[in-house]
Amino acid sequence: MEITKIEPILIHVPYEHGAPKPAMGSGEIRENMDAILLRVETDAGITGWGEAFGFATTPVTIPAIEHAIAPRALGRDPADIDGITTTIKRQLQNMMHGGPARFAISALDIALWDIKGKVEGAPIWQMLGGKAKERLPAYASLLRLLQPDTVARIVEAALDKGYTQIKLHEKTPEAVAAARHAAGPGVALMVDTNCAWYPDQALEMALAMKPHDLTWLEEPITPPDDYDALANLRERSGVPIAIGENLGNPNDVRWLAKARAVDIVQPSVVKMGGISDVWKVINFARSQGIRAIPHSPFIGPGLIATIHLVAAMEDGVPVEHRYCELAESPMGEYFRQEAGCLAVPQGPGLGIDPDPEIIARYRVN
Ligand SMILES: [Mg+2]
Image (cartoon, rainbow, N blue to C red):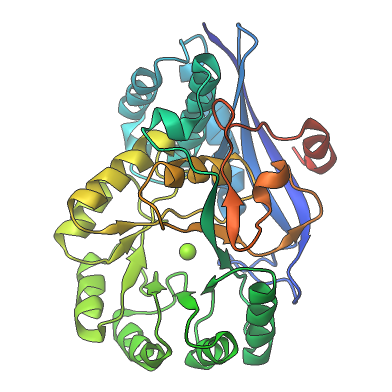
């Protein structure tokens, strides 16, 4: 079998989350949920789907797919996932530490796993050695809300919808206090600051949030790979620390573990190298006594790939699920949570292809 075509497809899907649309890290208002889907065709008529991280990196990630990754994968046998991705990583080693070219090869890796599963008639979780599961616990990953009363209102709405675990993207102790007050003591509450603070500020803020019983504090420090500062914060605050979505590749997780900088590592399937590299990181983390809980606030094949990875792990690992209502879900029922859970696809490969009509409606490239 040969890879005959590799096509990135950018979609913008309107959404609502019950509050004003937030600004992203890059400063733009997030008007839509966007996703860079990757469609990989073969001469056998089997098509695989992947996803690359987009958002502010989209204008660089799409050309990375088109000009750096695709020409090196066309004509290759899609069954040789490790051969293809290893060769490309070596040929492009000066852009493979992390960033858009790595996001691009992540999408390719996911699509190749999808093709492999379709050829073998097996879901990806099964190919990774997982046991059959129908559903997985999910946590509501709220968008940034800013005002404490809005935070309280949306936390209550998420709990009403069935979630039992909530992650905020807030930066103030007041917002966290409002969430804890609204949720009550039994609900797992996480706080993601998206690298908000320098190390001294981070200690002060972590201590101010500590009384609200955080399951973890995520990316508290800028830059995200200051492992010494993270280790120091973890030691001095006593608050569990999570990072990982802005690490470049599996090697970074080795240095993170060595520095004793985290309690929870969060590899991202659409950034770090796809299913192959995230599965390596999950197993490495296990060997180091670090919890792995992947990063996955996505609406496309990246979410589905994460569901397969988590399904292949031990019980009780929650899937990160973006808290919002999409105008339409390109991945059908698998984006929808019920009673705080997401369904695990049972079909071959990813187990679901993006809906072509929905893609056509929201495609922007
Ligand atoms: Mg995060």
